[in-house]
Image 1 (cartoon, one colour):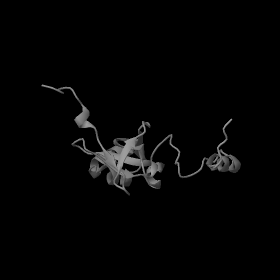
Image 2 (image 1 turned 30 degrees about the vertical axis):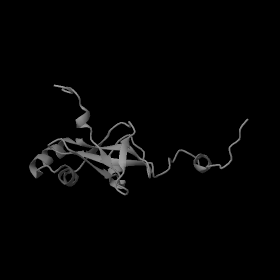
Image 3 (image 1 turned 60 degrees about the vertical axis):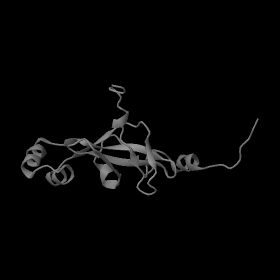
Image 4 (image 1 turned 180 degrees about the vertical axis):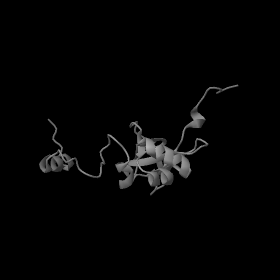
Length: 135
């Protein structure tokens, strides 16, 4: 009865969509997706129309089976993925697109600069210098 309580076999491994290399979780919080109208709810969650209609009347529906999470690929760097969990507990990851960012709260799309930061500050934060000084 060795490894009876080990959860190592339950670790989900995700792969980069472009190079098929292993993706590593960066420990970012899960940003759950929410849907407001009936068409989005039936399309993204796979619910039946009748159940989705009753939930859409109540207001925004937070889908606890799909979320945005940040990952790291050794070749491509940081990337955001949408993780979806099916009824059996299997997780599937797809790259996040513009629609997914609109369905989360409290997240800032990393591909669009923050509007409260000036252009100069944004340019200087992205500037890489090739000179290192040792003192």
